[in-house]
Each structure stands twice: as C-alpha cells, then as structure tokens.
Length: 614
Image (cartoon, rainbow, N blue to C red):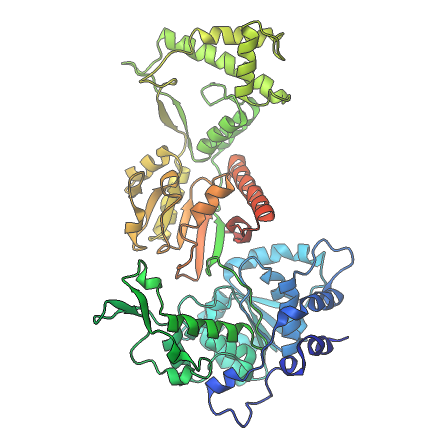
C-alpha cells in the first residue's frame, strides 16, 4: 500500500488530498480559504508512517529506529510535496533534515542550517549512516554563507529543486539579505519545493512565519498570504494588554482590531469578554482577555491540523538551547598537577584527600587555575608545632581511611562508615575493622588532635593559591564578545579574581534581575540557581559545570524559560580537563535517568551540544 492509499484509508479522501490546486470559486478572501482547508489529523497515520519510512530508508538490525514524529514529518512531506514542520527541540529534526528532500524526490536538494551546526552535522553522519540509507546528493550550506556579499547568486548557481530550511526562524526577518535571496529565488523558480523546520518559528508574531508557511505550502498555507489579512490576524493574535483607565481592568486587544476579518475562524468572538476578569493581574504583560485567549486557541487548532503541517506539543521554552564548549587547553602546569592529583589523591601541598568527592573538588579548582591551602592564623603565616601535629595526624588518618574506602567493601564504602567502624574497633568492640591495627593506630593519634578549633571551626581558614589565571582571562574575553552575557561562578576565588579585573559580581543577597538584559555580570551559582527570572538574557558562561542534573536544570532554566524572546539561548562551558568532562558526564547521565523514569524532558538531554570554533 503506497503513501496515498494509507492516508486515504486513515483520514478519508478530503483530508488526504488537501486543498485543491487552486482556491475554489466560492473562496472570496484569505480567511475563508484558511477556514476551508481540510482538517488533517496526522496522528492517526503515525504507525503507518513509521512502517513506510522504515521500508524506504531503514536498515535491518539498525541501532536507531524512526521516531513517530520523524516518520510522520517525512511521510507528510512526501505526500504534500513540501512541509511546514514546527517540530520542537529534542524530537530528532536532524534526521528529518537529512531525509526530507529525498522524501519529495529531490534531484538537487539544498539544506540550510545554522553555521554552528555544520561541524556536528558532519560528525553525526557516520552514526546515521549505520541505521539509515542516507541520500548522497544533499548540499549543505550555512545561513551565514547565504548572507555573504559574495553569495548574491549562490542559489542561482546551485539551482536546487528542493530547499530544506532547518532552524528556519533564521529566515523570519524579511529585511535580512538571506531571506531576500531565498524569496527572490523562489519567485524566479516557483516550482521549487520548500520544507520549513524549526521549534522556534516565532516568539512574538504570526508575521515571523506566515511567509515561511507560504513558501512551503503555497495555496495550502494555513497562514494569510496577503498583507491586509496577515496584519489583521496579527492584530488579533499578537495583542498585548493595556490598562483601561475607565475601570482599571486590562484590555488585551487594540482598539482598532477588525474582528470581522478573523471571524471566519472565530464567528462567535462577540460572546467572549474583551477585558480582563480581574483588576491589576500579577503579570499583566502575560495576561490576555478571554476573547484573545480563545482566538489563539482557534488559530492554534487551525494551524496544527492544516494539511502539510506536522507539529509537536511542548510546554518548554520555545527558544533553541545551545550548550557550546569553549576551545581552551589547560596549561602544562595545571595538567601536571591534575595528573598527580589523580594518581595520589593528594593536594598540591601533599595534604591527602579522603574520598573521590574531595579529589574531584580539588580537581575542579585546579581546572580553573587555582587551589586552596590552609591559611595559618599566626604572625608569620606558618603553622605552629601544634598545627603541624594536627596536620600530620590528620593526614595519616585520612590516608588510612582512604585505603579502606578504596577497597569498597559493603558497609565500608564511605569515609563516614569507615570512621564509625574504626571508632568501634578502637573501643575494642567486634566489627569488620577490629584487626586493622594501622587504622586503629592512626585514629588513636588523630583523636589527640582532632579537637583543635580555628574561630569555632574544625579546620583552619583557607587561602587561594593561583597557579595560572588562564580561565579568568578566557572568561573576560568571552564577556568582551558578549557584553550582556552572564558568567556563573561556583568558587569565591573566581569571583574575587573577576572583581579585581572590574567585573560586577552578584553574590548572595543580590538580585541580578536588575540587570534586565542590558549588561553582563558574574553571578554566584549557589545564590542564583533558583528563584531568579533572567529571561532578559540569552547568553551565559558556566565556569565550572555542575555535576548534578537537578542543579543544571535549574541553572539553565534561569534564561531558557517561558517568555524568553530570543530565538536561541546559548550557554558556554568548559570541558578542558578530566574533572570538567566528568562533571558533564555525571550531570547528563543523571538527567537521562530523570527523563527516563519521571518523563520530564530535561534540558541537558534536548539541548544542542556543539563546539565553538577556535
């Protein structure tokens, strides 16, 4: 059974065939045309689409299989001769972009992608090729290349018969050179098939994507194709609330809205209240009246169920999320210290570290160019004899505890459990460490000195030892390139170093929301990971990646959140040392677990991970 037969079987002839080749005689305006488009409930053919795509492109025993949304998008593009695909982040658009042109029988296809995606796109090809029969005639071009002054006739030279626009929001601006060049080519070659893909087609207005829908679906587009209707629809759907001085309530529609133009999609619009139901809502900028809210509901239903449209549903931020690795290399001195740390579990000054967490913490500090040592509160800054004995016995005790922990026996796989068992053994009680005399002796000596206190604390204060300020310099370079970007630090040493170089610091007790996206600053991760709305910013740098999925989910959601107006939210990070990469791996592994067991989509899972060009 071919694609047409499957569609007809599941949807019926009207929805399968879409709208006629030209508007019908009774269609008198754009709104009527849009209303009269058949309703396509493509979800009904998902299973058939997966089977069809697998037969066409799948390989036997392949490690990757088609997702429902991928197969549906390809299936619909094949049948409609193009497609409008607002498919959200994390749903596998890359595979769709690789196969969509082949789905419509392209001879000279062109794929447009963001410039930062070229390297990962190439890197992923072998992985996809193991599972799918990929077409070999696909030309890939970055949007930035299309924008260059030397590329005025780039499309004419390539003469593509199919153009696949991935992350098509990069073509939303009618005034941009790349948008004009695509528009001109399509006007000169009206038979060109266009497939539009993006999870962030709009954050503000139907104006952002109406022309893209028209390119892809032509007379079957569910978006207005003439200026007057488009502007009238925008006035209805894009309305922002304003205060009504008469009764204090908010009105979320302009006084000049002509509802009659939108009325074919919303004939009962007069039955809905045009004003807010309460005075002074807490978030008036997010408030819409019942009338506008229902208009948006009707529009969303019409758009999502139009022939040729395949869309996902998501409650997450509409902006694309990018996690971008900064291309730096740790200095030789730092690399040597990290190697010794991994081999000995000792701090650079010889202080033994008792467990893997302490080792990773020290490695995290060294990865940023510094480490902490004891700061002895004496006139010359040197330890007293009592301090030296405290150091010696503490080090010996930690070394023995570490020895037992590394064996990993049940009930003895953490410093706390070893310490409890050792104290029972020292009290001559039976237990697993009763015969470990080296451990017992180390504990006996340590007990004579463990009571020492410094300012009420059981360890001396610390001071920072800077080995190399390479990461500080790189962070400053990043801030210069991204003047409204945010830098997130986890260590006081980094905050102090940045402050000395003139960076504004937001630590505990401060409110970085005051920045309002107008300037950059350095923010404490611990102080501002939760409860802050930083959606006015869309660029940030993490100096030290958090190894906890929950912490990272909270941190990323400071900017990647509902209401973000930017098309793309970008977070830079460092992966230049083993401790740094291990933290990333730990966080991503835990995020995958959360997603698999709780079903909640995690940002670390659906973000685009790329490397910045050096």
